[in-house]
Amino acid sequence: MTHRVMEAGRIGVLGAIVGALALAGPGVAAAQKTLPAATKVEPGSPASGFAPTAYAVSASELQNDVRELDAAQRALTEVAEHRGSPRIQAFAKDVREAFAGGRSGLKGMSNDQGVPLVGGAKTLAREHQTLLAELQAPGADVDRLFVDDEVLILEGHMGLVEAYATGGTEARLRQAAAEAASSDHQLLSTARSLQH
Image (cartoon, rainbow, N blue to C red; front, side):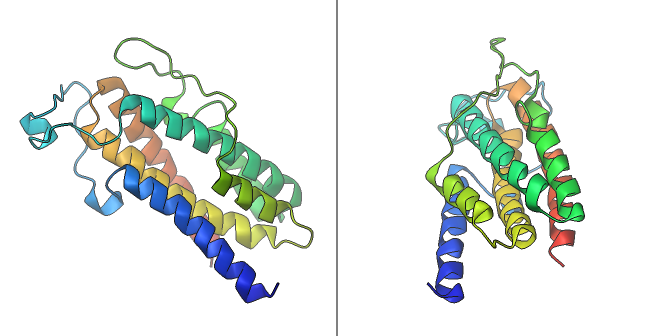
């Protein structure tokens, strides 16, 4: 298999990840100002933009997406911390610490009914399994692959949590999502600087 064919397949996998996250909600550019955590958002209300639902992704779907991403980030950073250059190892450690045991902004949080958001061991989605296999392949350019993966994963995740922070129905999760978006922004900035 030529390098170009492999790269085209990789772009397809990354596109699928970003596309799945984009379908979950508006992207970074579409995110509005974050609502105060105390704001009550009811479907059909002015706060929801008079939409039938305040946000396309329910709280449980947001939690499932976050848990899946946590598992993927733990697996990807483990490889990068062992096989990357010192700069990439340091960045991978920062990512791992942010995502360990549940997304940093969601750690220790509960929903409005007081149900804890527990980050759990979740099997990796097929797209994340593919990215992990590419990182683990003999002769893989771990530095480039890991940084490129992080840019796309963090961009997609920011769109998800920023949109929930704007219009999610649960106040505690809205606040947690806003904190997660802030952390993602810092990691994304570092990832982009490492691309150059």
